[in-house]
Image (tube, rainbow, N blue to C red; front, side):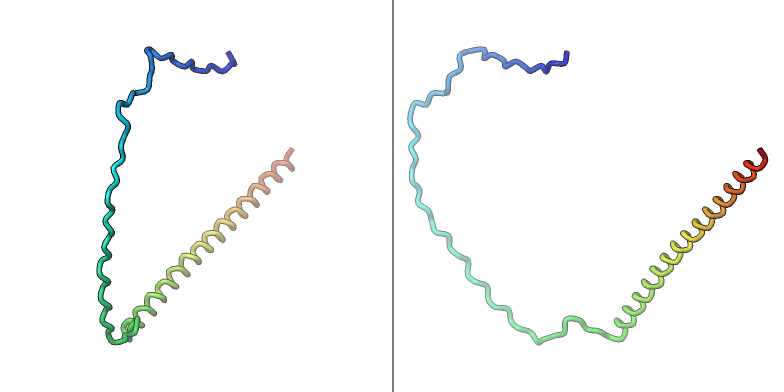
Length: 110
């Protein structure tokens, strides 16, 4: 019951022989054509130097406004998480005091 059972190898049904080749394969040499390189592209025409980023008063005002909004949103989320943690801690403390009071009062009445 606990011994492994290995599958048996099936026996071939007939005589197995490799396929016979009547003539040997002859390899014919081929001529290799050299690959022609495409012509090099022409150099691009240099344009006038231009600053990578143009800052206008409107752009700077938009960036400052977006940064302020992001700081206010992140601050609000963090403060609300801190407030939720404080409320949870206070409610757990109140529950602990109530349970302790109940246990002490039940022990005195016995």
